[in-house]
Length: 83
Length: 162
Image 1 (cartoon, rainbow over the protein chains, first blue to last red):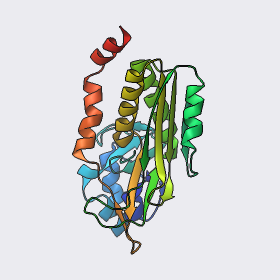
Image 2 (image 1 turned 90 degrees about the vertical axis):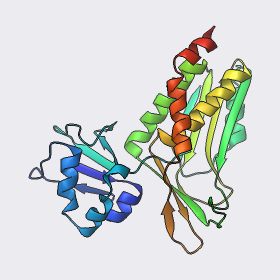
Image 3 (image 1 turned 45 degrees about the vertical axis):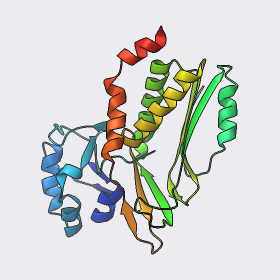
């Protein structure tokens, strides 16, 4: 699974992208976050406030409790601020 | 005639408006967003950084253009949004529309500009003169504006089609 980070999540984690092996298994984005938080102090800081985090699974915006199933790509980021 | 572009390069707003005029629709409207020289408290800004989610942005822009076209009966839509590091005064975004009348053309530009703030995967960070970056949070007012369009749909569109 590919995990992508954008904006301040990318800066706090220190990576734009990481690949997780099949040994990392989570049923929902929220469960995946719990696993990712343990990876480094940067991850822990990035995921400190879940209310400020949005998630896309395989290019579809979804809640943190959506099923992950066989997701290929999960992206975490703050709310959009375009325009 | 739709043109939906995410680019680091500057754009020529005049040329884009001319291409919409060439559709023959008759009513052309546009909004241009440019980098501010100061933040909300009046402190000088050195630059604005814009980031996007490449796998998602183009599809989200296509959906937005399609929604605007259906709702306002447009003959053409141009949305150009720049990414990267932009200096104060540089143009960030162009939203332009062509319709047979000025009402729908102007309204559609407002709709697109409001949706660009909250519905497309872009993120902005302000760069201060000392080089530090502050990521912007969405404003409640912007979210309310974007939501308001969705709540008035489809009743509003029926009005336009009469």
